[in-house]
Each structure stands twice: as C-alpha cells, then as structure tokens.
Length: 638
Image (cartoon, rainbow, N blue to C red; front, side, top):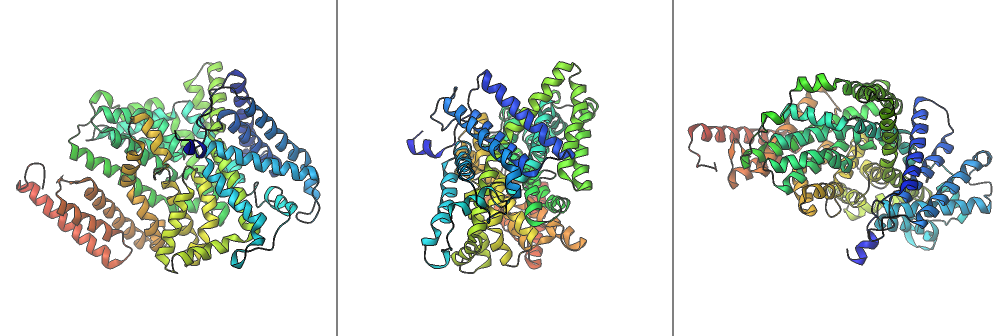
C-alpha cells in the first residue's frame, strides 16, 4: 500500500493473545450486561453509564485495532497504555460526576484537572477514530475544532465571537450537546441492545436459520442461489443493521454458492453487497439510524418504521428482480433438489427462532420502547440457546461469547457516534449549522433540486467508511436544515439522509460492503461496488421520489398511498428489465431504452408522467409477449 494510503487508511484487526482476548471478553460482557440491565429499567445515571460505555468502546478499539494497516498485528505496549489512559480518563469523570452535577454549566469554573482530562478524552476519541474509521474523518473533525478555536479571527458571515478553552471543553465534554450528546446516548442505550441481539442470534445459529428459510422459499427458482442471497441478507440485515457484518455472515454461504451455480464472481459479490446494504433500510432495526431519528426529530419510532416500510420493500423487490432477470439472461439453472430444504422441515426444526424475532417486532411497534423490546428479545434468546445447547457449559460459553461479540461489533459505531458528537457540539456552539445551510443554498444557486443534489453529495462524502448511524448524526445537523428550509417535511427529509447515508456502503471509492464481499468472491472490489450501485440504483432514486411524493412514506390518503406504491413497483420492474437486458425474452438496445424511459416516467412524481410510463410499459409488455408467443423473435434476442 502506498505511504499516503497507509496514513489515511484505518488499522487492521489485531491478533489477540490470551491476556488481550480475556480483557476484551470481560470488558465486552460486563458492558453489554450493564446496558441490557439499563434497558430493562435498572437505574444508572445517564452520565455515569455514558462514561463507562465510552471507556469500554475506546479500550476495545485500542486492543483490537492496529494504529494503521502497516503496523504488526501482534501485542502492542502502546495499545495497553492507551487502554489504561482511556479507563483512567473515563473513570475520572465517573468519580467526579457528583461534583460536576452540582456546578452550573458554562458559569462555574472548571479545575485544571477537569480541562486536562477533557482534552485527553477528546484526543483518545480522535485516535480511536483514526484507527477504526480512518484519517479523513479525523481531519474533518479537526477542521471543525479549529474553527471553534480560531473562527473569531475570520471575517464575514463565518466569523464567531470566540470561545475560551474552558468554554469549548465545557460545551464539548461536560454538556449534553457534545461528546456525550444524543449520538453517543443512542449508541449506548439503543443500538447496543440490538447489536448484542444480532450477535447472540448469530452465535446460536440464527444466520443459518435465515439462510435455510430463504433457500426453502426461492432456492428452486431460476437463479435460486442469487435469490437466496437477497432474501437471507434482507432477513439477517433487518436485525443486524450492519452491511459489512451482513456480507461477512450471509455472504460466506451465498457468494460461493452463487459462483458454483454459474454466477460471475463480480456479480455474486455485487448482489450480496446490494442485498446486505439494504438491511440498514429495512425495519425493524434500520441500521439503528431510526433510533437517532427519533431523538433528532421527536417522531415516534413506530411512525418512522412504518414510513420506511414501502421504500424498503421496493428496494428489495428491485434487487430480487435484478437477480431474476440476470439469471434468465444468463440461462442459469435452479438449485438441485438436494440443496433446497422444505420450508416445513426448516420451521419444524427451527421454529424457536421465530419467538425472539416476533417478540422484537411486536415490542418495537406496540410498546414504542425499542430499547426495552430489544432487551426482551435478548432474554428470549436464552431459552432458544438452551434448546440448541442443552449442555450447561456450552450454553454459558455461547451466551458469554455472544455478549462479547456484540460489544466488539459496537466499537466502530460507538467511536463514530462519539466523534459525531464532537462535530455536533462544535456546530451548536458556533452556530455553524445555519451558515452551512446558507452555503448549500449558495452553491446550488437557490435551486431546490440542486440543493437536494448537493446535500446528497455531502452525505455520500461524509459516509465514506463510516457506519450509517454516525453519518446520519452528522448529516442531520449539516444537511437536514437545508432540506427542511426548502419546505420538505421533517420525516421525508431525514429518511432521505438515511437512504443516501446507507448507500455509502457500496459507493466507490470506499464501499466497505463491496470490499468485504470482494474478500469472499476473490474479485475486484471496485468493480463489485460499481455493479452493486447499478443493482441498487432504485435506492438512489427513491429518496428523491418520496421527498416530492410523501405517499410512499404512508403520508396521505390510502388511495394515494396505494397508487404511489403501485406505480413505483412498476417503475422498479421496468428499470431492472432495462438494466439487465431481459423481460420475458432477451432485449435489444431499443427495447431496453424504451423500458428505461417507462421506468423513469413511473418514478417521476407527476400524474401525467406516471400515466405515460404505465401506458408505455403496458405497450412494451404486450409487444414483447406477442413476439414471444408468435416466435417471431430471433433466437436469443427479441
């Protein structure tokens, strides 16, 4: 790797020795148990819980990740020193919490030790970010912090009044608007429970269950292996919410299976990447961004989940149709009977998995207490684990390592949400948000559509290599005000951000999901990312559609919702047929172009264009069907 890329890239996973492994396990299990207990209602002061959570996340980050890709992956004295410093810094704030609770923020003086501990903690968060996410985000955050320190020296509209070191530290570390603000709070009190649930479910065989269910449903169809990848990744991703984790978990089964049945390595990786990325859009978890949305917007979680349902279904319909049309175009055969289990056999064997999953969905939608619902679902996994592991020792090991896996899976999200808190705190302290919104308007010349496009570009750039919750937290502060100022309603504006942020997982050049798939498919990650973006093109279109047509988010009359969903589904069909070159028969260039025009018209939120698109699609379907029936089409191409 060139030296510049080595500096910019995040570190690698460290090969842990026994002391490191057991330290990671003990920190992870203790923190996971604490946060699940809090979700059940055990009272711990918010500040103390967040200090403990951040100390655990930082410690796990330094123990499990090297300083950069070129560093050795063995034991590191520097890593242990950083762990000790993290625990001491966060422990200091735990010990001083009663004192800090009594002071008046931004009024009472901070001690020199308070300021020193705060600066050390900020530096530790920056270093953990550099290791886990990369140098680019550190440079971005450093720019915002530099603006807070030196912005008073600027001239014009971007100048501010100036802040002392104490004011900056007080706002960024000791207030609820900075490091320990909404982003980290949601990570600790909401996201952890669902990530731990996904890790426990995986430990007791949940990923195999999702794969077998998908296989039994679609494995016998043409291109069954690709369709199994789509369905299983959607099912697993709706719980895990992490595109990379989804690719690694379900892709380890689905990608080799697709390649074995005739799918090219690049397309197999692309299908898995696109399907896994959609997990961050699919209720009930939605990559944890929905939890942050509730905090940022005040919209009930159940409302957000229901609003996201139709777009998520349209997305997976699109990926499924892409796999279907490509399989027919390439003449792929269904999977053999011996490889496809019976749905009844799968349910008879693994019905117990449905109980915690059903409890999770019911709790999220009915109780409107997602953290409690997640904790209940975690508890419901225990009897399922007992069925799979009747041996008490095996059961204890499964639960122990599942809890540890869950907290390890939280490292990237926790670090990203902490660094996002620093950005959000800087923006709120300097009132930079309004200035950035004005800047977006200025860049777009006041044009609404250009403002939306610029906002989408900003979100994609912010999302390079970052978890969806952190991208959302930053973009909700930077881009959402500009969108809302255009007259866009709050829910569509924020879901727009979630969709664009989620697609950063397959958007070159970073495309973390594509790189994860490439390691399994043994193919070029950039080509996988490009093909995945084509397969997931609907996800780039849908946010623009539901901004202008909120009926897709179940906002409006029932009739309008049904019509909007129906026309969008037809648009998905037409676009995928055009892109893959198959619709009942192989398509020539002209027919692909006409279907593409029909698809675009069906997506445009205007009654006239929707009618034109529907008529054009109906005419094309009749024409192609007639050609097929009359056998006038040349072999291979119609």
